[in-house]
Length: 535
Image (cartoon, rainbow, N blue to C red; front, side, top):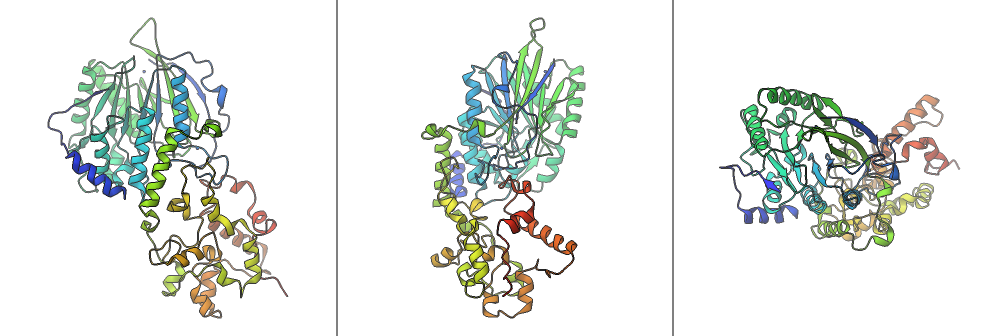
């Protein structure tokens, strides 16, 4: 891997960055398009072939380029429902299968590896970068979400790890390189990273974030430096919108007509606004512009074939590949899987770092009106609401926490009952004061709040317990209550409100089958309805 080494760029004290990390971790184009059909958003694009249909009709390419991006912190599918798509274990298996075909492979990522807001964001970023390194990624751009991390964390990786290289041509006073040459394959691939105007405007407000004053000069200089290395194909990791990428492609094409020494930008990987990518590259001048979707549900594979009559030209083929269940590791090969080993380390770090107590707590609407109201646990509801308690006890909600504790080997990483991003939907009041794992709670109190209980929906009920006749509290803990004799339209409205509330946890990321069954079927026919029956 040849690196660009620019004079005068800022260096950081490697030891200092290491300590900080420890603290924070507490081309000529012809098109043949075929597609496939990830963790966590689950909308599925139809008519995308699977398995053996992948790369149908493809010969071995001179080089294959795997593109990914916008993972947004989704390391793995949560495993709460099937089928879910995405995850770095499946991506590793996909990359491994391509290399087993003996395809020369270069892997690059657009960035947005991190999640924008989570106490575990730094740990998730460093974990993901370990896995991308394991996969042999050559380069990754600095995404918008990475600016929500201390940039020293991203720089720490750039300084301490040879791969993947972190690229950002127009980000000033940082250690990131503008471009690299992936020279372990032939044809030689040039990779350049650039942050587009829309993202620049959003992240310039962050402390110590500075961009080149003259963007055009920086790009021109970087392209000249890259062109001097005579790459045969160039991939741009462009952290910007399609319209911005389109304008950039037109600009680069015009500049190249003025100066033949500038390299042609063959592929631009840009931000995808939709979670589901189209799977069809858009061509502007001699450049393909691609988006890859969100949350790591897909990767794209580009096959480049040298034109025998024009050796400097390449024909490209493209396939969108879904990270679906067909890429799961067989059960008898789970032990020793290298990515699983990294995830086990991640899970242990989450537990030992006490991350459960680091999630922010806000006041529930009940607590805003009644400041002393606390969560008490479902058992305390049984005396006055025996029918509702019996319905709850017989439901899956009453042992929701156990599903985390007993997570199967396919639901990696383990120890999910110490992971706040999972626990939030498997316990009572996790996001609110006095809810599960609030630092002010005793062990006994936390034990009362495991599983999805009465107060998961009704809110903290100590004020109600001490004053059962207070009508003001009734309205707060049962805001969707309506008269059973109300017109059907009112009843329908209530059902819609309840459905929307349930989707805070039963969302498209985690319960892929929720919308397949009408809500009233779940509510009535499946026995969730629990109003006190008439005597």
